[in-house]
Length: 264
Picture 1 (cartoon, rainbow, N blue to C red):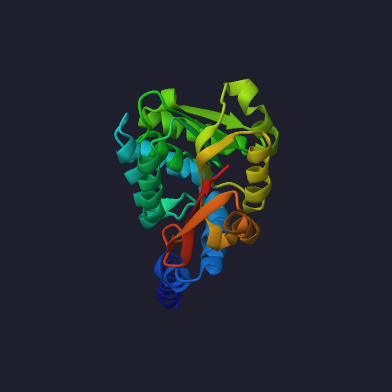
Picture 2: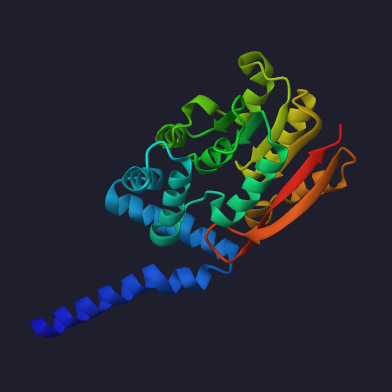
């Protein structure tokens, strides 16, 4: 009887593990909404409870364990490996990250604003490609995320190029010129709350932080989606926009980046 019970428990545990590790992730990878629900709600909360840690803390541990200190590309690789092999996270990801890299290299910006730092993945990607005197200001609303991001950035050896600022974008954008001496931004990367894309873009315009030729690059315009922002930049005479089709980070669900050139 006990042997039968043991076999049943073992078999049940093996089935649950297979569902968690392979079957459900495979089933949801082509559907963005289901992928976000599974990875960003169910799995994250479960692992937070089981490990008594947060996903950003686990990501930081993976960086410190697997990345070479002072090597930004090894930090990016360590995070990508963690997200593909261990635990999904809401970075721009390796596939869209290559598009981000190409835009940064094309623009060669001196002043960069990132809206939404999370754990510093895209911040590191951008900063590693900037020219010597360039600077990136990255805004993060969540102080716990900002704390992790500073440690990831330090591990990459990029503290001198990056200013992490905590607080709401709507409060900080009007203070950019006064607080940081910025006249305009060459590149703005939007990857924060999706309902803030449009109001923050208009705020950047109103505050005179965009010049003719400034580039806005927006992530997750399809999944979760930013329909009001897309309608604005694609129809406004002040912008020339281009969509780069890709996939939601570490899945096969469609997503993409919208590149918009400010025409003045």
